[in-house]
Amino acid sequence: MTPQVVFVHGIRTSATMWRAQVEHLTAAGIGAHALDLPGHGTRMSETFTLDGAFETIDAAVTDAAARGPVLLVAHSMGGLVSIEYMGREDRPPVEAFIAAGCTSIPRGAGLTMYRTLARGFDRLPRRGQPLTDMVLDRTLPPETRADFAAGGYAYDAQDTALRSLSVLDLVSALKRISVPMWFVNGQWDQLRLNERLFTALKPEAELIVVPRTSHLVTAMRPRVFNAVIDLALATMAQERPTSG
Image (spheres, one colour):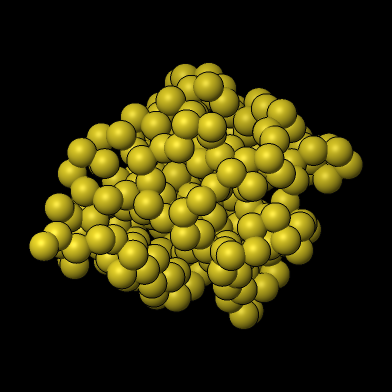
């Protein structure tokens, strides 16, 4: 059976943020499935809920698992939700997990400040889009620059999604995850706040910090991130029992 990779995007973005990774895997003959969470991308008219996000991830994983062993790859908000999903009492059909840009507990003063900043951007002309465009123009390579905007920006879902994250029990979830796992952060990622806690809770996981890289590690260093995916797939193949 052919390995399958399921991708979960971060807040405000959509499945299109994974274009570089999908193209890389497709060229190698590996199944690649980038989904849209409720309230994002092709589902922007929907309301974001955690239950809806879990159902979306589980449906994609279950479908992919019918075709081959699954690697789950998730970024930012999608990573936080996927940690909770992976830490279920009933283990999902996933053989390895990459959690990128999500080593932070989303509650307390940190979450409040993040929501306050997001609301402030919303009050700017065009909801701060010109500033976002300027930052992306200066930090992302031409090959991935258009990917974040291609599916549209889910401004209306942002505060609802952020607020909902506070109920996640990531500490308990991390303790229950039993598959090979990688934490991937950019050196300048603002969500490295609890990196030491996450690696202490999951000491067998590998931590990869990409130098001179922001929170948008998947797009800022696409070749590096693709290499991490290749590493995870190779690890899965090595650990999978062979027939005969």
